[in-house]
Length: 284
Image (cartoon, rainbow, N blue to C red; front, side, top):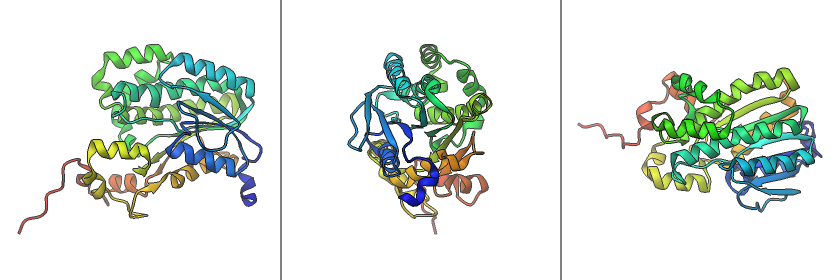
């Protein structure tokens, strides 16, 4: 892939969380093909090539701290990719919050000292976070809590705010990305962005289908591809967004959902299609 060297990954030191499967695995593979030195962070050792592996459960602050300390010795780190995430069906709503938002944020903040000036942080959110603005006051309240133990207590005391855990965590990733990008940009010229995938064919989605039901995903609108995206089709936008070619892009939430969010916002997609209940056939 020599024609893509302008992206800046050849010889770069990158950290990828959640790279044992799904979009994280695809991201690590693409980065390796682009010549990056991949440091893998996951609860399981990945099968993709990597120069270092750090077994880490992002729901455990002490493990995050240990891994971040090891990565600071590796630095400077050129790019961080936050790809770890779990559905609420694995461990429940609180665990989803702990891994997807609280742990991901804490890991990032612990690794920031090892990031090179002008580096990039890219995170996988979801188009499930489309409604983040409606709950902004509660999100900002939790956003103000940097300590992961205190953040967990906040969630435990407010199950109504946590809701299913997955949707809330993804909304918080979007809000945190937009908020934190300003300070990191001013202080270190570090860019911070996230993507919002649609349903993507991964083991994660297999678990979600078992919870929600196949019918919902059979009805899901896929305007561009007419099918679920693949993990690699989501990895490429993440890699491109985080590259040095996007020098002025920070604080961005990029929908990588085949146009679903835009269609819902502008009325070209009927929101009733997105209901978990089957849409009734017209009579007569």
